[in-house]
Image (cartoon, rainbow, N blue to C red; front, top):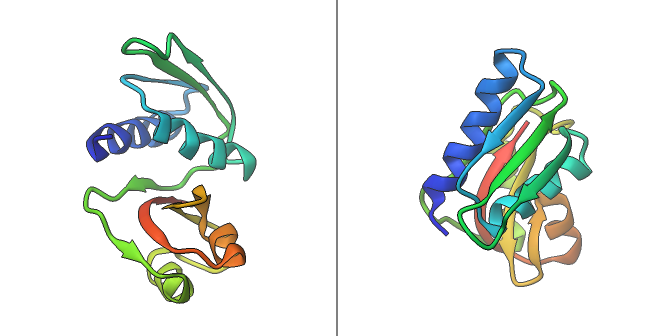
Length: 129
């Protein structure tokens, strides 16, 4: 999956929220993007999302909630060991109380709290707060 596709989609969501829009339309899509959005939905940053025609180019409609301040995908692959998760989140996120780093691990796409609980590392996909 191209990291640029994910980054463009996340920037589209942030820009739509700053303009006060209720929905954002993302295109093209990928399975990693849907995993990232699922984590955002589980933590209450977006209301819901729907995937249309996933076998072709496809598109996703995201219902925004107004909670996203910043959301980025890293364009470079950065390995992260399980013991370094706490230090990395302290550098990237503004506070310990809110925000999440999304990591692709052998156990799937997880946020930094789940990865620390399972004691697995992986590659940093992006972050949101």
